[in-house]
Length: 184
Image (tube, rainbow, N blue to C red):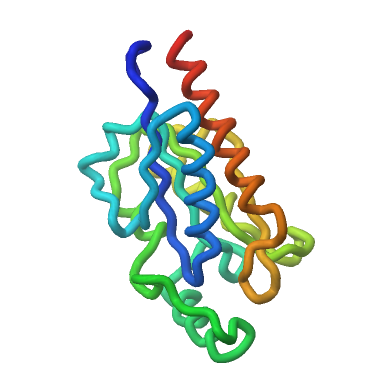
């Protein structure tokens, strides 16, 4: 990134019921105070455009204590009639997501920071997709140097109070950090 340009950030996400998308949008809003932000479903991100961004932020919900799989996505879809009664699946929710995108995309040398949503209970019980995302990114050659972010949802998959604001604040920190790096 040259010191005269505005930093560019891509926020790419996988979401089942909308909470992870809402977090991505809030992160994007926070970034926009200091950098350009582009926020979209990871399934709509071409690997050929990644070099245009100074930072890529990727996220997915926590499923079965880790990163979503085809089986966990299919299981989550059945929750619409049960514990997620009234919830609607996001567009493309059942198609390959972040896990598969990382596995098929050349990420070597790119600066990438992960985030996730997980149920608001002890991390020992809920698990978190964050370590799995970071591990896969590192194996793909990405530079995962920033601490990731976890947003909390309730047992019905709705964001807990204050989570949108926290995500926006975290996005602001990322944006300001990039802006500072550009000046140094």
